[in-house]
Picture 1: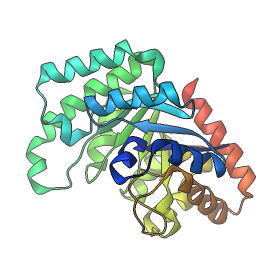
Picture 2 (picture 1 turned 180 degrees about the vertical axis):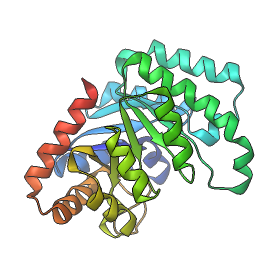
Picture 3 (picture 1 turned 45 degrees about the vertical axis):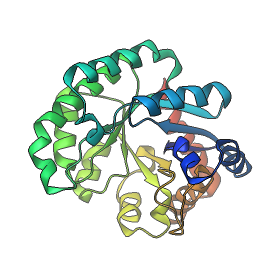
Length: 252
């Protein structure tokens, strides 16, 4: 089966794409599992509800780093308690991380790190993978994860230096390759430099469409698999089996 380890399936509703339709489209392409990532409390609740209806949906609960900055420490702690209460219903903690895309965000780095430590420690305690956002803060993120000695990590849409991608792999963590690797040299380089044993596939639905359209859907995760097969000179079925093996190792 094909697996999308990072999508925001719930956000397709805002784009006029019913969840049922998106899941049906995905299943037609052989996509049987989709980790749907939360970005705030309301999204986390919606994702839990989606998983009750669709067995293909595996919830990941978290707070997007920029959204987390809007919350007080007690509100972060309340969300962590909410996640603990639903620990048996989730596959991962995410989407969490650091973001320094805008210059003004640099002054929030210490606060972001405090928040990320809380979510990563939660992932460790629950023995769940942490799905990590690290935009323009790749080294800071890696150093923090190494400091916490976390074992189960999915680096989502990693856009840092190739030396850092290799460091991630040496740590035994995973990099998830988005469907826009169909045209993105950055992600094609990651595929070249990182062993397939450290790769997973994602769409980041509704973003990063492989054909530069809008919106993206989990069905398009097949583009990630095909690009890995092309670059690694492997059969698509071989890639499919290895990615499934990688994925299952995170859920053990």
